Length: 559
Ligand SMILES: Nc1nc2c(ncn2[C@@H]2O[C@H](COP(=O)(O)OP(=O)(O)OP(=O)(O)O)[C@@H](O)[C@H]2O)c(=O)[nH]1
Ligand SMILES: [K+]
Ligand SMILES: [Mg+2]
Image 1: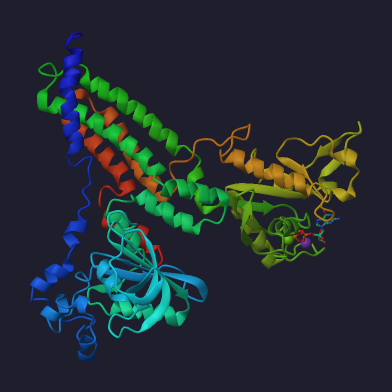
Image 2: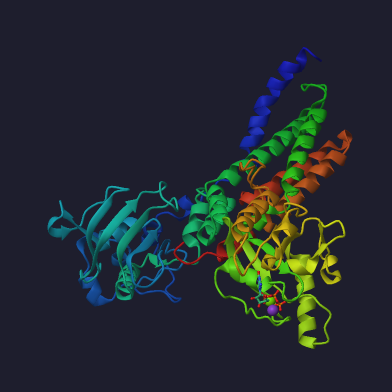
C-alpha cells in the first residue's frame, strides 16, 4: 500500500479535524450568553420571587430622586421587585486592600456594569463646567465625580474606566472606579453600587472565576495568577508570571492535542476498519506517537518535583552537633536575631522555621536541636525531631565546628572526621559548613573535600560572602534552574500536586493503551480518551466542580 499512503493520509485529515472539532477539543464556555441581560429577562418576567436576604429597591424617597436615565428599568416595571442572587449577575468588590492609601480600586463586572457607570460617574467636559453624565468610550480613563445614584451626593473625585466585554479581565463588561482609599469613601461607594437591584457583592475569587468561565484563563493560569500574588521571591514571581501568561496552558494543550490526534487515528480504525479506506499500519502509527507522548509525560513527572518545590519553597534543614553554630547560621541567613544563641550546648530544643529568600529562591530554613545523646527529656525530644526533619527535608546542611572535625594526620595534612551522631544523617547530597575557622590556622582549610563544603567563621564573617554565593548557585543547580554555565534550563511544567495527580493518571492510561492489542481497538480508544481527559482536567477543560471550588477558594474577594 505504498502508493496509497498519501491518499489514505489525506483521507484521514478531515476525520482528524472533525474529531478535533468535536467535544474533545473544544470547551464552549457559554456562561456569558446564558447569563447576559438578566435585567431584560427579569423585567419581562413578573414571577420573580420576592424572598431571601435581598435588597428591596423601591424605597419611595429614593425612587423619587431617581435620575432620568434609570427610568423604565426593572424596578419601575416591577415595583417591590427583589432579584435572586443568580439574577443579580453584576458583581462588585473592592479590589485593593482596605485601609488608608492613595488609591482604592472598586471593580464592577457583569451585564449591567454600564448601568452602574451611568448612575455613578459624572464627568466634566474638558475638565471644566458642571460634571455631567456621559457615555464612556471603552478603555479610556475619565476623571470625574463619583456620585450616589439615588441622592446625587458627590462621594469622591476619582477616575473611572469602562472595559467593554469581551476585552476585559472577566470577559464581561467591567467598570473600574479609582477613588481615594479611605474607609468612609470605600464604604460609601460600595453602598452606592448596592443601590442597584441587579448588583451584588462578589464572592471570593469570583472575578477570576468569570475570567475562567469566559475562556480568558484556564485553570493553570488561574493558579499562576494566585501564585503571582503570593510570590515572595524572584524565582517564584518569574515562574508564576509565565504560568499566568499561559505557558503551561499551551504546553498542556499540545500534549492533549497530540493525544486526541492519536485517538482520532484509532477511532478511524473503528469506523472504517484497516484495509478498506484506510492504510495499513494506522494502529502502529498511533502506537509510535503514544510511545513518544508517554516518554514526554514521564520526563515531566521525573522532575524531582522542582516546580512544586519552587512554588512552595525549598525545605532546608540545618543540623549538626551542639554548639556548632547552627542558630548563628540561621540568624546570619535571616539577618536578624531570630534564634537564641549562647555558649551553652543544647540551647536550641525545638524546630524554628523561617521563610527566606536565598539567591532569589524561596527557602524554608529550619534550625534544629544539636544532635547528641542526652538524659534531658526535653532535649532528647528535640533531637528526635531534628533527625526526622533532616530525613523529610528537600535539602540538609550540616554545621560543624571546624576545630572539632578537622584532625591533623601524621603527614601534616588535615582530615575531616565526622562525629558519629551526625554521620548517619550525612548523604551524598548533604551540604557541609565548617564553622569557627577563626580557631584554626588557614592551612587546615586548603583542601576541602568538595564544592558542597564551605568553611566560614560566623563570628568574624570570614568566608560568609563566598559561602552565600556558592550555596545559592548550588541550590540553583540542584533544582535544575541553571545549567553549569549559568543559563536557565527548561522551566518545570508541573507546579502543583494537583497537576501531578492528573499527569500520573494520563500516564497510566497511555500505558494501558500501549498494553492493549490491536484487536481490542475499541478498548484502546477508550484508554486514549481517558488520557486526554486527564490532561484536560489540569487546565479545567473538563468541568469538575470540586476542582474549581478548590482552586478559587484560595483567592481573596475582589480578585
Ligand atoms: N569563635 C567562634 N564562635 C562562634 C562562631 N559561630 C558561633 N560561635 C559561638 O558558638 C556558640 C554556639 O553558637 P550557637 O549558634 O548557639 O550554636 P548551635 O549549634 O545553635 O548550638 P545548640 O543550639 O546549643 O545546639 C555561641 O557562643 C556563638 O557565639 C564562630 O564562627 N567562631
Ligand atoms: K548553643
Ligand atoms: Mg542552636
